[in-house]
Image 1: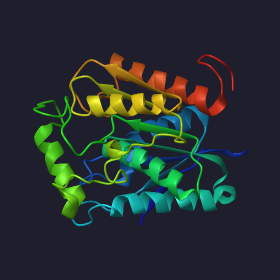
Image 2: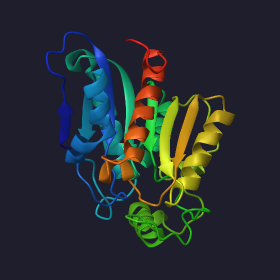
Image 3: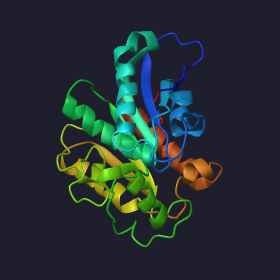
Length: 256
């Protein structure tokens, strides 16, 4: 598996390591998308080493191939922390990458090998079943038809079954304890709004520090596609504030 590793210039101390997982509905995308991502933004602003895996895609490689590849990348980071110059692990991603972020956090918790300090599943693709917002959705970029197609290809032989494992569709998880702190954002008119809000609520009910900001609009991946807009700038600023708060225990505006 190819991975892209982004190192800061003149690194002199150990920094957080961010595994950033690209989106694309589990069927599209590439590791190079990291260059436009919030993962790269966080690294530039705060200092971090970012690893982006070029995980296998459906339909040629359905579940659990993508999860296995992402866990392999996470384990690579964990096993090479000194060589990479990192001192903690963060996992994040957009859309399907956000879904894999949540799945990876559940999987890593259950395996008990690797500790994750924060999860950033942005507008994540979590639920293989229709929700209030993903049913009959005609939003821009992603909609009901594309969502059904993506899940069908990703689940492969599991598609259409009722008993879907949470490692495939994290919304199927029932135990939210001992998962990493979480921050995310999503638009109210896009398919993943309801499952994102529900995921954060269940984390909160389990005692996990978690928050979501919901923005008005139906443009999926708005921060990537329209980064110049006031909404995208606001979303990324708040993400930076939450990252600072969780990783450095420092409120917005504080010094590191």
